[in-house]
Length: 342
Image (tube, rainbow, N blue to C red):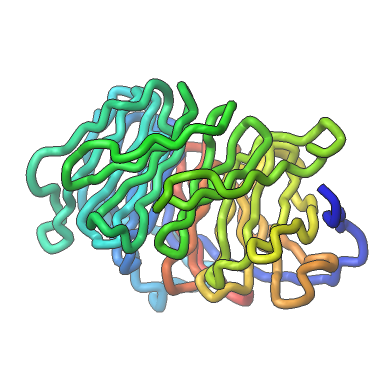
């Protein structure tokens, strides 16, 4: 990819800190975490097939050096899937929780936040022919609530009308497992795949409008795009790759800005902070890094380790408004962290 460069030297010293507020432990690895749109709850899905919904605590009561608490679990369903829960998403209306699994199913749970319980029967979506690796709800979809899901098998990306419980479109193009999805601007979608590409889609059409090769793909190298995210301004795309590289891409300009490496193993999760200043990444090297994007993002970007797990980090998610975040890990825990001095 012409125009891209790798930045590693000349990075300014930057030392953000955070502290653990709460931690939940399961009997198996925890893959999936997400906040509800208000930030009042968060959902946790694990390899033990268990789905939990927890209360987001009052962070004013937490302090640096204080004891790490157990979160309050409002809702727990064991054997929610027949396999491991790989991904979880919460609808923008706040009343639907979707999960995907290696049992090839997507499950929709109607969650009543007032009663803190499921209302009505679950809906099973069984059109995937492989592991469901990621799913997201399309914001402001014309049909009400549209779910986008993808994974292994035929590697298609499915758009589903949740009111009807039926797929509306199947978007083909990827030739490797789809590992990550991110939607923005109501109708735009980014997908990252083991085929070493990130694809941009317009779901109104629906069709792929751009294919972005991973770093090194021009020379016949490159690696799978395990994580994708778009910043709040909808101008900057970040992709995290299995070779530990992170690429920043100018969506409007249609060009890569730079590639950098702050991790030593696969990047499995990426998210921009709510106020657009930081990029958080979680990696199989057991660390969560924070990149400071407040300067010139074509130059060397300050990056620091802000949290660690005892095993691989699988997902990380910012709170919708606070500078706090969730991380899930193969060490069988999900931890809520609060930033001290970003």
